[in-house]
Image (cartoon, rainbow, N blue to C red; front, side):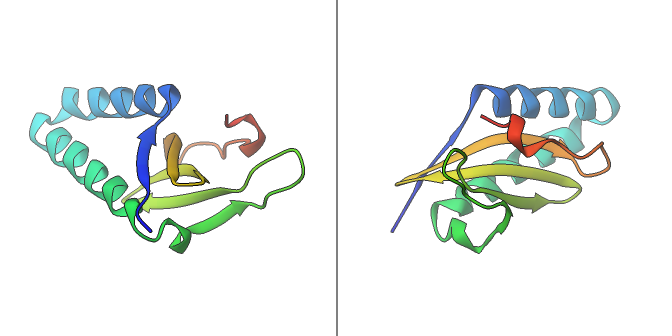
Length: 102
C-alpha cells in the first residue's frame, strides 16, 4: 500500500521556522535540510509503520509515531491511506505533550 503524505498547518509552520532559523546562519545548509526532510517524508509513503509509536491509540486519541531526521523529530499519524505530519521539532527542545498534537 502507498500512502499520501500531507503536512498539517502546524507542521508547515514548524518547517518554515526551522528553515528560516538555519538559513539565517547558513543558506546552503538550510536548502540541504529542507530537501532532506522532504525526502524523508516522501519515504513515509511506503511502510510508515516502521517508525516508533510514541503514543498508543486509545478510545479518544489516535496513535502517534515519530520519524527521526538528524536532530529533528517528525511526529505523525496514519489515517487510512494518509500520513499526516503533525509537528516537527528539534530533539534538544523540551519534550512535547503528545496530547496537544492535533
